Length: 462
Image (cartoon, rainbow, N blue to C red; front, top):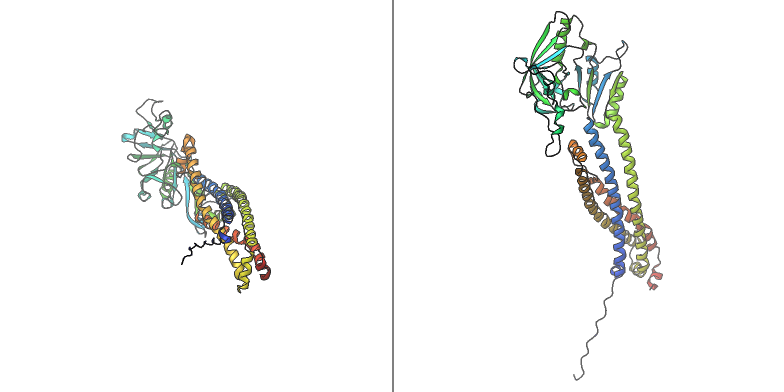
């Protein structure tokens, strides 16, 4: 009782080798290496995808990637004729979605009048006939009206059709409106403001005169009304800007009547001036184009431009991806080094596990699991960082492009924001799975080394 109680000194807790500060630092640096490697792969590949998307958008502005223009190979008797029979064969092709002949009123004296008492006159009008039912599928777009209204007298005027007319009540030299004079007058966005034409092309009735081109000066007169206004697209033809489009059968009738007046056979019966073929899928364009050439016709499409650009983009994408993979390979070496160091420091622990009857395969799994977890953690974190870096890159590139007027106009024409880096969902999944695979692969050698350690020697190890 008289003895003074002495406080027992608490034993210092044993620190597990896995959580020692130096082990934490080493593991953190290894995970950081995987994060950097994963970010490099994702960002490099995303830049390649962004380049490919930019090229595709640029080509889409130049023309529809699934449209093939078909022309007659020549005017000789042996040349294939682009007639109704040929059009039927084109429609029967397996990969073809829609076909329309394209007939242009050429070498015919045509005069178009607008307004009350034929006040406004145009003697240089481009008139094209197509299958109006297939117009939307072929990429023709309307800013006003609908394609359903195209009928007996309904026509579709170009976006700048009204600028083709002159005012017969004004003196020569001052009787037209120059649509390009607006470049001296810019709006708030810096775009030129077009001057107002003499009339609204959608609210004006038209009179079409087709002359016999003979001394008797007989004429065919047809009253027309605008069923819609087309969006300007020179990839489709000049008619979308300064001309007009009517139903194919309607134009055939007018040309037949004019040929009857002039005493000649209709030129269109020798063959159409061209045809438009809509393919179901972009990847089938080359196959369909080859088949059309076998029929004896000439073709043109965006395929001749798309293929080289796509090949170049793929090569750049592989090069960028290879550079990123080098970083991930360096990270794999870091994982291998970390696991080897872990084995040398946990030799006694391995011996205890073997003494307790732990299976060799379970010991291997432990080390492979640790290596895989390092890859998983680095992959997930690296993917998240990649999205953040991609966002910053896109915002920076968008700001740089919008700072210049040319860049702003290009972005406005494309209708889509310019993206330098594009990360699709499959790239994120690939990055995580690839990081795990790299981790497991890097840990395979250390795991094999761990299971070969003798249990007795391992227990004796300090």
